[in-house]
Length: 334
Ligand SMILES: Cc1ncc(C[n+]2csc(CCOP(=O)(O)OP(=O)(O)O)c2C)c(N)n1
Ligand SMILES: [Mg+2]
Image (cartoon, rainbow, N blue to C red):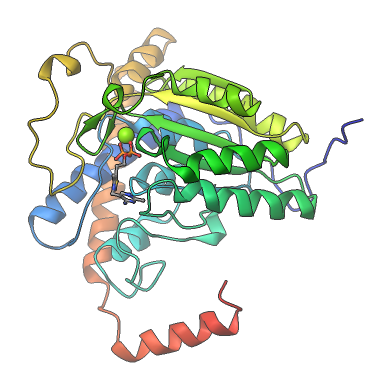
């Protein structure tokens, strides 16, 4: 008989998130990425930058299905997880600018922010690595028996890696409480999906490992949330892992170093903008245009304030580097 694991007393159920709130989070994410494009241009944020403009629904929908106490592993394109998990954006931008008030004291940059208080285990820039982290955390969660779940975000570029396939086998074998979200934006760096994968319906991969899987429109924030909610529920009640494939499109450059020229412009024709889809649905359900405009304005102000906070944040002191390392050592490297 399968035991139903009850969430611990300390795990608060996520507050019900309606479409207006999902829209607000997606708008915040878009404003964040647009601001980051400017900050990179101005030289205030340096190094590689992976934006997700046009892909907001997958990450925002998925994180909205989680509860307090659940954990997330992410990739080199992690801003949707930052916004979806409610990271304080002033500190997040400070981190991206290398400032002392950042979550990692300015050492992590845009890609590697760990924020345990918000359930973010720290994304990884190594393709496929988020899956390996999820195996370990899923195993720890299952052994702890607290009913917590790990959401593992990965990209289509990872599916041929050993890590992806080894991890799917282990989460299936140990029936770990892990939800694998494959954010299929149809490109791994400059390589179109059908140039490295024969079976481009990536959720079908899960069948080989005996894992249930579902494919959803990755530009429809409610569809993603619903699919991930089902998967999280199964994982929480000891039903094991699920793979959710969210199909979207990478409509912005891979990173700042992208010279382009490898995407056929015809591919982008007729694409659904996740924000527009959500806005049309909200209006059809009786929301007024002014309410959407108000949400847009609020998101823009919130990001402007976060940028101002980050710009005012001091640079880290060299001595702090040693102090921080010693503190982490003292915590057993956690
Ligand atoms: C193990 C490994 N190999 C190669 C790279 C270089 N690399 C960084 S991102 C990337 C493509 C990832 O594509 P995908 O997973 O589809 O994510 P997307 O950029 O589309 O969000 C590659 C090959 C890396 N970081 N790690
Ligand atoms: Mg991709």
